[in-house]
Length: 302
Image: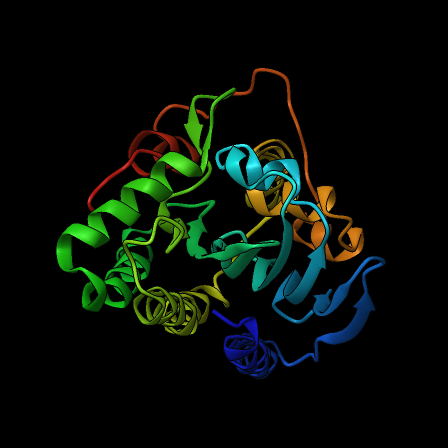
C-alpha cells in the first residue's frame, strides 16, 4: 500500500469541508502550513471568533519518523521500533451557541515499515457528537448519517460494531460518563490482513464524506436559537469534559504530541472558554439534568 494513493483524497476532503464551513459561518478559515522536524508537515485551517463558530479547526497532517510513538504501539507492541508514516484529516468545531453541539471527525491512515518485512498498514477514524442541550431530532439525524455511511461496508452488524466501539472509546473512565452521544469509531482496519485495501479505504472515505450532511443540518436548525448566561455557563462546564478526554485518553492527541507533531495544531481541538466546578450536579427536572439522565447513555439512536 502506497500512501501517495490516499493523500489526494485527504487533502481534497479538507478543502471541501472548509469551503462548506466558510460558507456557513461567513468568516474565512486561516491557513497555516507547517513542517515537522524529522519529516513531514501539514496544513491547519482554523477559525476563531467566527460569526457562528467560536473556535474550529480542520487539520491535514502527513508525518513520518524512525520509531512508532508509544501511543501507537501500546496495543500493537510488535510494531515497536518500526519507521512509520501517518496522514489524516482531523476536525473539531465548537459553536458559540450552546444549543448547537460540538462535533469531532477524524480519518487517518498509518503505515509501519521495517527492513526486510512487509509494510503493515491500517485505517482509522470516525465522528462523534457532543451536545450541551438535549434535542432528540439532532442526535437521531447524526446517527442516521453515520449508519448510512457504514451500511455498504458490512451492513447492520458492522454499523452496530462501530457505534458500540465509539460509545466505549469516548468514555471518561474517571468520571464514569460518556463524553457525548457517540457516533462511529474504528481503528486498525486492515492491520490484521482480514480487510483488503479497497474496503478499508472505501469505509474511511464514506465516513469522511458523510460528515457535512451529518452535522451542518443540525447547525442550521440551531444557529439562531436564543440563549443566555445560564446556557453559556453550562456549555463551559460540559466543555471541561471535552478537555479532560482529549488530554487523558484521546489516541490522536497523544500520538501527535508523542510523535513531535505541531502542538498548536494538535491542541486546536481545545474549546476557547471552559469551566470546572467542584462536585456540581444539575437541578432535578432541568434541561441540563435531562442531558445526563436521557442522552449521556448509549442508545440505538438510528
